[in-house]
Picture (tube, rainbow, N blue to C red):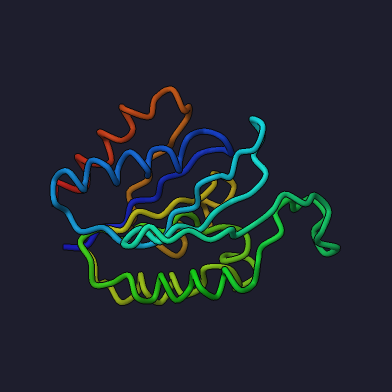
Length: 177
C-alpha cells in the first residue's frame, strides 16, 4: 500500500526542518529515501536564497534568490528561480523512484497554478514507485494539493519549536505501512 503525506504549514513554520530531521531518522533505520529538499540559504541571519538538494547524493544547487517584485504578472512573488536548476531538479525527481520514501520539498504556486517548477513530480508520484511520499506544500495551497492527492494524510506544522514531535509523527506514519 502506498501513502502520500502532505506536510503543510505557513512560511517559517519548520516544514523543511521537519523533513531534514525525518531524513536523519530514516537513514538511521536504513530506509531508502530520495527526492529533493529545498533548504534555505542564510546570510547574516537572513534568508537570501533557496537551495535544491538531491537527497540521494547530497548535490546542492542554488535554486532561487530573494528578489521581490521580479514577476510582473505576480509582483508579490519574492523568489526568482533559476531555470537551469529547475531543469536539473526535475531530472532529479524523475530519477528518484523507485524508492521507499520519496520526498518533494516543495510543490507550490509554480506547480499547481502555472504548470512550472517541479512539474516532473506529478508524473513521478502518479507512477507510484514508492511506499511513502512526503510532499511539502504551503497552507494556502493545501486545497489544490488535496484535489490532486485526495487520499493524502495531512500533517500540519504549526511551529518550528515542535520539530521533534512533528518528526516523530511523520516517522510513525511511514513505519505504519
